[in-house]
Length: 161
Image (cartoon, rainbow, N blue to C red; front, side, top):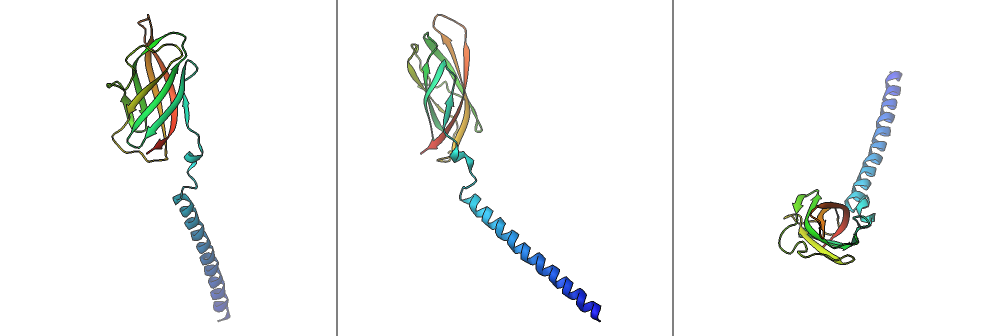
């Protein structure tokens, strides 16, 4: 009879131990879930906006809007005039060619001048204040040359309203 009581007390102690630590672990999961919900673990908000095309085609400014419209402002540092033939944007939302009217400059861009490229990358709405990362490839040709050249740039920008 005494063995049974001793075994019951050991069993009760083991159950109390497991329940106590179970509550502690559940509390830790709830705390981690709450922190995650409020964006504490979202590292994107700590990353600066980046736009890099190299030294010959310098990125002066960039922007992205919630409706999917993006704009890139580039400077021609090639030392000769260039003409932009096309621009291609590759992102998580797919690939888009920006050749529509008004999206790329239709005239020759003199050396040292700044020009804008505008494009709509998606029909979906992007989340405001989130980062949009994409690769842009600008196809151009130098004045008095028929050869096409590509310049690829990496862009990370905060989506605006």
